[in-house]
Length: 452
Length: 75
Image 1 (spheres, rainbow over the protein chains, first blue to last red):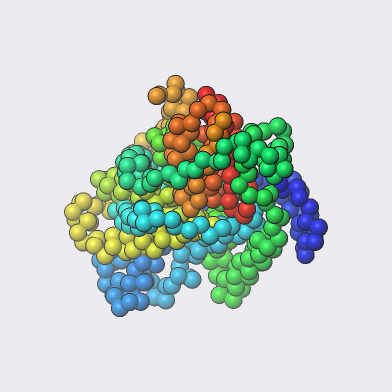
Image 2: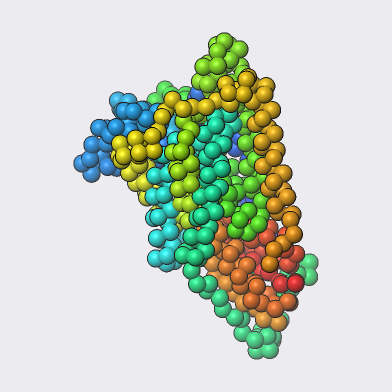
């Protein structure tokens, strides 16, 4: 940590360099936020998206459209696919004139990628991270396909079904959460046996031979820290490029927002764009990761993220339920309340899709939102995941005539907890008790005596 | 004392953490493991794990988006 205090005597941008050393700047733009901060902010911003556009946050439906559009570009005819005529999540596809720049779901995804890129640049943490092996590439391709395909079967991903569906009190969100967890367990076993790879471990030269050099090259770290035999490189140089690039990018993104609002006259797309950017920024700053929340309890025993996801779902439930009750009071019927939120039919297809999705997320190293965030951070593994995610989604949509009847998908099976539990009050009690139970289970899991 | 370096550059979660756990298990108490990472999440979850397990650790940012986690095995 001593490294960062080096004064850049000849920085071309002394004001920016000065700003970067302010502690408030450091804690907002450089140091990672807590998971809870990230989760609560995601819930609040997701609610803002619902308020300003009338739609809940989703990620994968747009990626399916991207895959289908690509298929159209190479001569296919995705518009004829039954999925885009019969299935609730695909109906918007045949809207005339729809493209990647005016489809709200696509705009939020693009915003997320650029928001994460801006966030990484402002923190001077952007780096193109190469794919090192065929094993990694295989994991990325397989994981992307599984996620894209699985999310079609389950009517949403970790965002659409879990983060939006569960707080909307749609039963498919709860079933998705249970089975993404099971998928994550299976994925973890696959990862550990097939995709972990051989560790690249090297031993530093014996202490005696470098002792003399070490006293010169290796000043003791502040606070009398760990004694190192060998420092592998010189102290970090003050970076002056990434931060100004980040500022320039933020200005560019704001201009795009103004174009949406004032040139295309679409305040909804302008809001969607800004909120997508906010999602990317929050995800990058907090490293909020749904995949790790599902995977780490089994793989590493850690449940901090799991608990943060539960807190985010609880906050989101309160915000969405308030909007639903408002709609109920205004419209006078449960149908009016169900216009607010993210709903999907629940059944065996939810379980199958969520399991495949969970496996894919663990193998590829990120869920739907995590993949987009890491694309923005420069992670080439996720650059490879993304196209296969789109292809997997397009395959799921193109082959819907097999899976729809095969899994007996019944789109009328939307189960809204206030309908089946006898009103908003008992449903909210059940929802919060269930979330509290998951939180307590996660808390107990992390604290239980270690196994050997 | 032995010091080993584990190269996890380019690897996504949870690979860096699992390799760290495996590598540290092979070391003796007092040995040091230097984990090279460029995954922004590993820069948070490996220190969390080390903290929970009670090992000493330091994070050094060695260049943009790249960190070295220095972990001293304490038990």
